[in-house]
Length: 317
Image 1: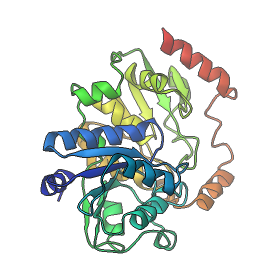
Image 2 (image 1 turned 90 degrees about the horizontal axis):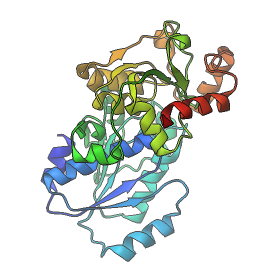
Image 3 (image 1 turned 180 degrees about the horizontal axis):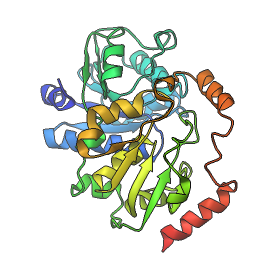
Image 4 (image 1 turned 45 degrees about the vertical axis):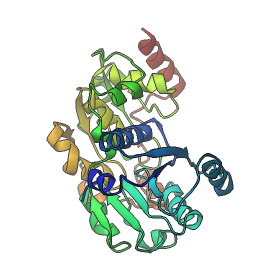
């Protein structure tokens, strides 16, 4: 069963789409799910529920706008947040079950770290949860928690370069081919840069985590080639028709999504010399890899603020 099949099966019922927050790339997931829902003819309403939102305020907003029914379906957008690094998605799923004890909950295509002891504390076990994985490692792992587990592509892949939803997501910005960019994570998912990647071969090297949305979009849409370990930088760029290279993050997510989805779209995988040793499933493990590879950040210029200024000057032109 795919997400489309599920939408088709329940399209006579109303969906409550829950957006769990995140970075700019997460909103690509939401846009793809909404496109699919529109194609199927699903009635839905979207509500934001981040880790800064109290359950009471979320429920108040929903009930003030909707006459809730047990037939309503709670759709939690997919993410890579089911882990002890970010902590939010498992807690959010548990909270949704408490707030909506009788409603069917569907989790959109997600990636889950292999942390059974941690996740067991939060993931509610019942038959009214349908869980979609977005790659095969998560699919096999989540079966130990749920019986209704399926695998489907990240909903961002429902977007196409020329569709209305993608153009809206991109704020109507033009697509150009101005430079080669290396986009790197500097958070808990960071790993040492593969030795075959040389920063001097790129016009821009940056982590755009704190960029405003328009700057973030321009960084991708105006590049001719994107090399990254941000999964949705890769997905956005391949949809926009860029040459894309992807390498590992700190757990299986990037390689597993590449194997399941991105390889057939022409994205090149850059293997890491660490190979199977990149098996990081918790914040503690991330700290260990930083300690073991003390030069992990030396591929970035020492003055990140100066770098950001240079990048932004390029994006304004």
